[in-house]
Image 1: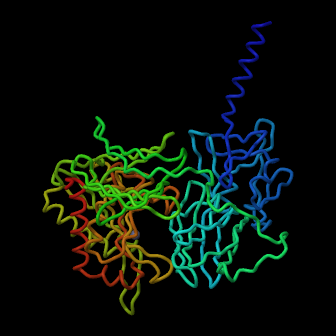
Image 2 (image 1 turned 90 degrees about the vertical axis):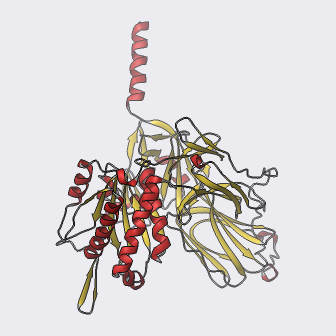
Image 3 (image 1 turned 180 degrees about the vertical axis):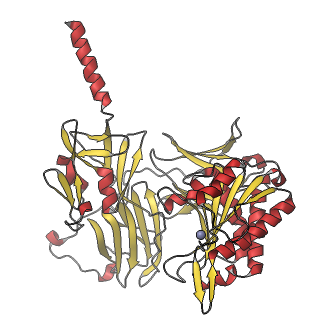
Length: 542
Ligand SMILES: [Zn+2]
């Protein structure tokens, strides 16, 4: 009897595990929801019992077995998301819903928590108003900070988009505008003003306006019932005086990895930027600092020349690492903060002359790539990419490196053929040359270098090359970017490369400023020189 009971219990336990579901937490607008029955995580999707739908505060309507997205026309198939039973409870897929509505989610494996977030889409100053638009409703509130006078608007449940929102131009009573990710769930907009708006406000919206009437002119509420709700002035009232931010120490471990530990609230992720000329990594982290501090580093094995920290708006500190060479950088989050790991990127070290490098001129033959017609002449991307690539190949050969061109004449080569050639040659680096183009002529200008997904070695290669390109090109830097921002699966030539690989968009063929440069033989030569110089610095360090 007992054996059977134990056997049954065992079977039940097995069943409970076999469905692959785990209880999970859900954070909406910065607050963890109380959920009973709980939300369930299947490894990719969070399933929320339909009875909790209202807590999401999203424009949704529950039917018997589907959820209708009320902001989309009901005759669109995507307006309906089917519910599914999970452990006997009808549930909706939260990630799917968020995506369809224009929001996004962040899963934290450590705490089993899914955060639902909107993106800030717009912040525009009018004469006496600030208009804000987010992709999902956010909980917002305003309050004042002094010294200098600031009106602060916190958006809970919001994140900055990957492509920065254009900062509104100061106008009227607003002298300066700053927008920053205050914590992982909150975007903070700070308006520096002579006399900030007196009455605190709050709301739950995805598109709204805040009046910026100076205090003296704001209407006085005569009836207490009309008085606006009182909101405490400081964001965290009980907070003790903060400890000043300390520049963390760089440590090199036995594997040659340089580590930097930065204390941060659990689950928080800093805003990280990779910048050129000079090469540096900038991290925006929560913290308090009175004035900028700087520390020079003498040891070249630490990859960092200077460490700087400077106070920013909204309780943030910008920590800048000026690099002595390109590095593979990774961020690991832990309980007490984050660790930034820096290491020598793959296939670096030794001499450039010892390396095998594949140069890939974009397009060719019947595939001209981007085109621009000017009177009788047609300018084609394939011609420019070949010219630059041939210069690079010549310069690299002169350096003594082994160079493989995926094409050296005007002919079509398949994308997979290009990387197959590179992979079978066991090349150390793959560099693809392209020119950019977009739907609106003269709207975008500058150089972009793409790497695949989150490959730190390729990003380092891109940063080293861009660092030299911006010195000679006279074109704006659009940065080193992940190709996952272009396409979910990235770019084919980068995805299928087994070695560190980058795709360089030298400039925009449909921007007159860029185009005038791109077609110049002299510019093509200078760009080729810069690319080789960047590659050499990447391999040999400085
Ligand atoms: Zn192209």
